[in-house]
Length: 369
Image (cartoon, helix red, strand yellow):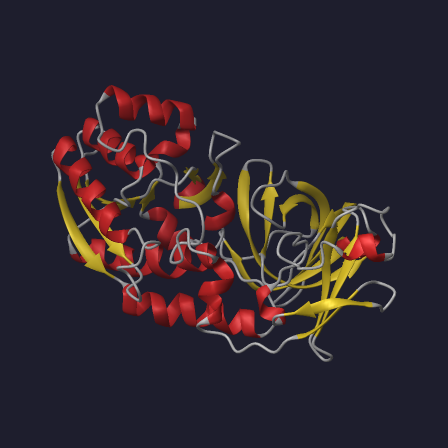
């Protein structure tokens, strides 16, 4: 096997740590890079980048590789965070992890690694890359269905995939933890990080509050009755159940669309009247869509697949939904066999042909059932 100089993104987590160890075991020359992507209030209780860097450095020490601390915060603010705020202000719900992968981890980080003389980069994502005929590359789901992260990587292109390795994509998460304990990695039992890449575990609404203008307005049900006031449409997402502040309404003779005690869900955001629409019950028709349109498209192969039947995800943790795909010039349409729940503008619609991730786009609109 060809021995390469591989630059690994070390996050301080167990997946990237085991990634670096596996590559070292294979005989590659491995260099670790810790990416700092966020600087505002970095000393707060929520932002763990200092702790993460200490963990990453301890891992590098145990594995026996060098580690470099690189600051991408300015790139991040320009390329990811500004877009994130624009989308929220427009009433959509963006997915910053998709943007972060496309703009930072596989652009800014990849460029930096190439300047260091890397032949390949590697990250701890649960996905796989397969080279097929004539030097073409496919993005595949990770082998652990519970951890597959191809959804977040669907904007990667041929040039990026040609330079990328995902060693833990071949493993189950339990196996990754087992390896980490076996080789006595200091972060073997570290919890997986949750939350958005730059926000960490902090309360989301409180964070957005600092950056977005917000105008309170009415919360109305599907019959037009006012049930309360919202704090600004940007702070809610379709399908949201928590934090609506109308939990007690049903005891006061509220509408009974889903039965007396059925929970309320955000169903629509009407920007022209600044109204938040809520419905009662998980199965309310307003929460279901039979089709969607997506724009801002990106295809792994560099071009869209032929129109036809595929599987698609409209959110990260869901099974592929059977659908019919039709491609336009700069957008595409998906028509689902079964109605999909809370299809959310701003989120990604990602297309699959079995285990192959073909790419996708940003949901522009959804067609109600």
